[in-house]
Length: 423
Image (cartoon, rainbow, N blue to C red):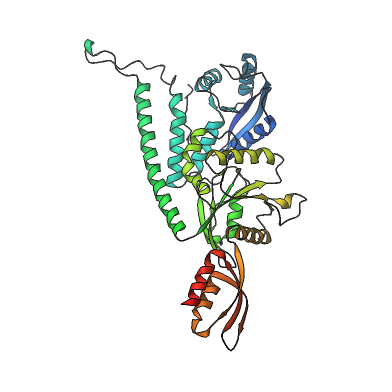
């Protein structure tokens, strides 16, 4: 008999499971074909092979079966002919519709939210990301308990005046709510630790930059372009290759230092529970000094993907943080690069020249440099050491009265140079 599995974490066989993808295109829906293609990419990232895609034009999805009953009958016949073990639904569906479809098809039914959750569960490696996924998974599971215990009656009391006991569904729901509370407390502890680390960086006057953007836009590739191989992060041409925020310290040629954080990628229709669960991770963007909005310029749907990023950043409170658009993968287009046009930077993350150009532009945004000319007496040669460490020397000439220096340094540090010269 069929085993109804509502949990999003499953042990898969080495072979790919076969599934049929169904979707309803309403009169008000936008980018339907784009969303269908994205769903196929999500399925592939989850080791699921889409055998066939079936769509239907409706004014609104059917209340009971998502599609009209006649279309559902057709899907069931194809499901049996293709020997598929799963049905994927283009968008998030209610628990009741999911149960109805699962009962009708006699197989597992997953909507987009469940599919994203499963990908997150398989990719989570750190304690924080695993807790975040577990929290979102439990919140997704809780309203779907109804109907999972049809064969179970109430527990009976020991005597007639005790009455009937609680249903198993009520016991399980309470256990899940308790587990959610426990996981949220653990996440709060990690969030506190992150805040302490972040405040320490701020006290050290270290500027911070956050890489944000649609999943698979090339954020991790940009990060790896800035660091040595031993500090690189995982990157792969697939959706949600990485789920954890990685932070690295970057030093410019002018000896300015900033931190660069690679955040989790965005996607359309991201389950709200996941947005909440990953809020602490995305806070790297909220408290950063500069946000880099990375866009895959070679993607034909780049405008709609950028809109998703803008909306997600607005949801987590990043409206007032300075930003730059970074259009990546220009090598796959006819656009000239590397270059900057107003707040838009065009690069290819795989090329060193582009990374060097991007680093320069970040430095211009974060560190307002000023060029100075000073004469340093020989008895205060330590000032020259400070300038070499914190600025960039353009000319250095030894004269009879001292050392004549032309240099550029961050505006915030000019008063320190002036103080050292006066001591």
